[in-house]
Image (cartoon, rainbow over all chains, first blue to last red; front, side, top):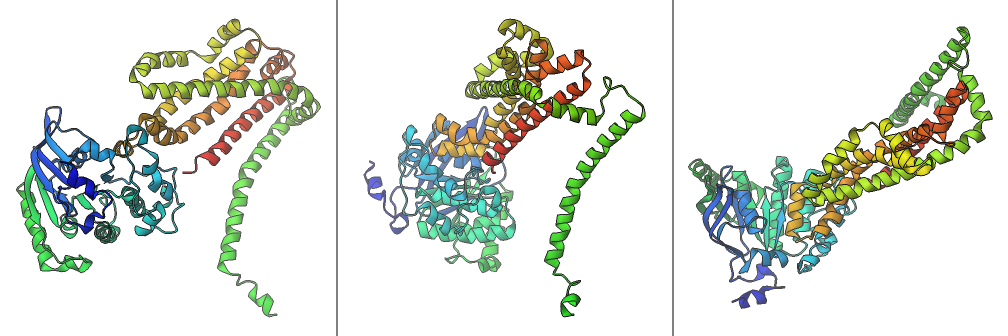
Length: 271
Length: 267
């Protein structure tokens, strides 16, 4: 059953079409006490694609990421990552998480923060794959060459988030979970990081599941926008965003882009 | 000629630098000047109103005694210094270890935190005679008193520090499959250091108070014993000189902790 998976390990994911879905949810349910945050959600994420998640507050966007990343257990149904359970996938470092707050350790330099995943987890049985890029090369990839020794408080909010992205990429995850990573940044920084993230996605071939509040960010980044509805969290619709690749800033001024935005805005109102 | 003409138009950077230097000079001169003026006022007041030396000695009397009795002062300085340092180390170490136990287990905290609060509510002056009775007139009682006075602020701050790791950092630890020990050494302990040092700065000075209070209750040697001795002999200049010495000890302890903090907590 696991055979097709084994051949994938160590292979550049973006290069080949992958058989197993990046993530698969079958009637997955999450409850907090009596409150149902996610109710019987069915979802299949194609490997290598860029998904963005939109939905009204309380629709379980962040909960969905935490369910997939084994931070909270499913009360019912089944969740698998590349055919593995979420725990197996966590121990194999199949996925990485980028939080809204960069969650850097303030006493460690940028480089030492990127290296953190190498130092942690073996005692609990994690198998730590080393990606093709060294921590230094990853900092260069996110445009922080020369700032390796800077402490987090010496970096701007955007730079801190880029360190967090470099740290997430260290173990070459096949699924990158991002929970409003640019939500606290100013618009110019956000635009720049959006473009950089698209470059990183194309280069690494990883699957990205990206939660955002911003409709235009969801359309600009996503190949598919997953729209959730609230109370309880359920799938509303998956919208294919058929816009020319590679995406560039001026795409935002085109009528097609705006049509997607207004469609999603109307959809959001019915959620 | 040309050189002289150029002088007034000094480059703006040099001008800014000299302005900054003057601001820095003023910020040191003002507090020192105030202190010197107050001491001068004290000297004048004592002399003008003919205040007897045993009630309030003139600063010059204190200075003379300080120099003349310096060997005696140093002889009494060292025991108090050792008691303060030993009390500081023991009290803080105990507080840190118990804080770790509290954070590790809610039940340990539930069991022992009320006791810690109760011990803290007993005035140190009230508990000091009890401890001298238990541990005798030697150094041990003073070390225990100094340790006791350090204990509580460090316990409370250390517990807060160990719990100060952000929820997202803990989620990151979970995603990286971190063990409890890894979370402690790599995340909780470093996070607690700024909290720990603010507590250590408090106990740097309170440990000296603890040692001196312990010496009041019963000791032959130490700054506390010298304070009692000088008071009962109406030797006010010696009393003042001893107080000066005690405050010097506190300043020394505080400075050492601050220096360590600057070297360790760089974020």
